[in-house]
Image 1 (cartoon, helix red, strand yellow):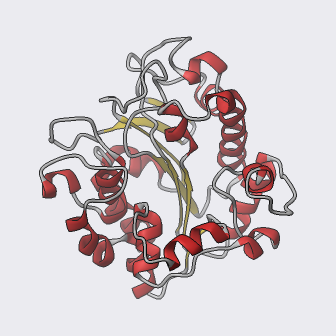
Image 2 (cartoon, one colour):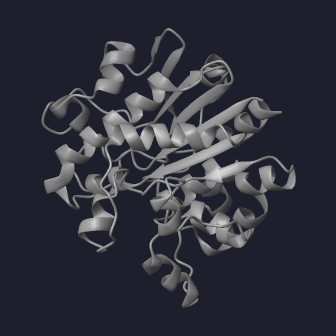
Length: 301
């Protein structure tokens, strides 16, 4: 079986060499430094080493303005040029006219209809299910895709059993802010949990959104600890996964986190990585974020 793990990291572009504004340079990032012996920048935006590839992916899609999450994520998970469809970049949630497209063309639906196993490993707290139960629909593209197609979302019970991962990786926010009786785990433990889950599925997705929150100037006191946890999580995944039958794609919807001197998104290309069985194919064929869905489908056929 050809497996694909998609790691969606919100709001990360390839930025300038800036030891004050670019957190990857300010704090260092082992995933880049160990795998590529370099940190990506606008001056050095294509890196490859021993089957690992890092490269820029166009998030602007021929539409003027700053790329946004609603249209960017729709483009990634549905394989369409969402900003072109509605004539603008839009976010943080998808524009209303994109909802039918998300329902019919999201990548989860493709795998479900093919009877191929798929896992969205993020867990959601009771607060989220209460929000959805109230009839509100301001949801990210991933969660909207799942709810529109009646795909089960993980809950705290799944998290406790080790069958899901919290959005901030370690369970710390669930424990400290949401008052759940959960064990705080190491990023390495979460990474190995994701790899174990992925062995049971053809397509596995994990979404990390704190990078976008930090890029917007929220919770900046957690910036250093968050980037270090993300780094250890990613490094463990990229160095311990099964390269023989699995391809990992890490992608983002727009730039933001790579320049914390401003609180808006950037025009920088989205950062993309590939590793494993078909990593070179991904590197050579994916040029913009709307091409990611189709490439995943091709890799798993």
